[in-house]
Length: 396
Image 1 (spheres, one colour):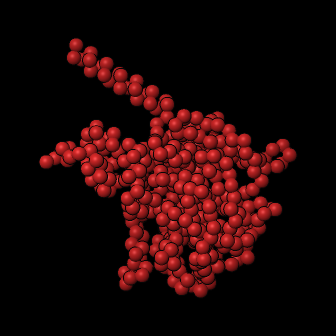
Image 2: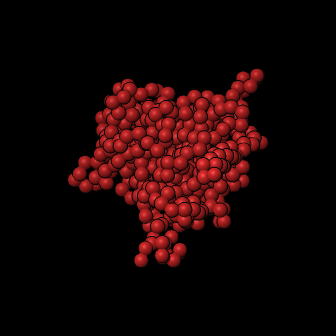
Image 3: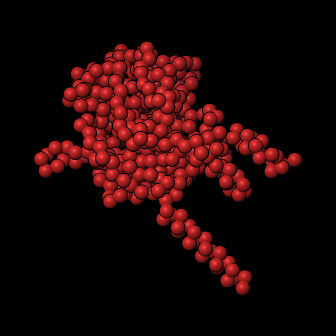
């Protein structure tokens, strides 16, 4: 019996157990599988199976995959991290100088240096889509990716763009636009804000979270809901009104948020990480009793540590942190820390820049299909008609 002879339900169940990257290679095997791997129900079934997470880092304008042996931190084996080379799924990756990456649902949103291009990319399938601006992108634009959940058609993806500028009265103004993949269009949101952002955004269950702050309120957790296209806020487990403080967010097992805080202005080398509850569809957010406190002075480090991105291991109470060595050419470094342990597992030999900080993230490979824009679909139809017409002429 061949797999094609199996009932459709059984065939789907078997294929859902195959590693995501292998499925991406199998999609060209036959038309039936090509259609199946783009079916929202199959993608949802596949994503429900807990695949192994992968690590990725943005460093010196390049995006790299990481092979890790971090399980060694509690064994005899020393932990280590190896860069496996630039991610090669992007055909023109060598020509792109990427300044920011943002992860959501297995997709990576890439902003190039100077915000000249905006690209959505699925590293598992190699599919990409360039997003055209409403008018033009500005150098200080920031972008995040989110989705609206639909039971019938899966996730409907959107991009939020924020643009800040000074008006004639020298007052800083922030405007927001939102892009919908399904309609291939931008629209302006009627939102005003009186706060600033103090960390990169983090996506969880389709919404995006930041640590934000205002003079009147100090720091707080800011959330953008892509379903209602509105902002909301939640309290943080710490209080601060110092704009020089360092804050960072991370997602734990696609269920919780963790927040990191350092009082850098006071030259403190103490890093504190808190963990949230499981965030459900109601977007309730509170903070658990879990706290990881690391005093880097304990390890006699030569400079103040300034963590901008991290991954938390809740069970083992350690964190994988990423920053630059400000005393040594702003080189990217990655290290594992706990209450009583510090282990540097990687340091770049290429000189970095104080304006280009690395960003470490983890993601679960996904088969999510990136909807093509209208112009791309039209070009493909014309190309297909031209090929078909040419073949008919040859036969005649």
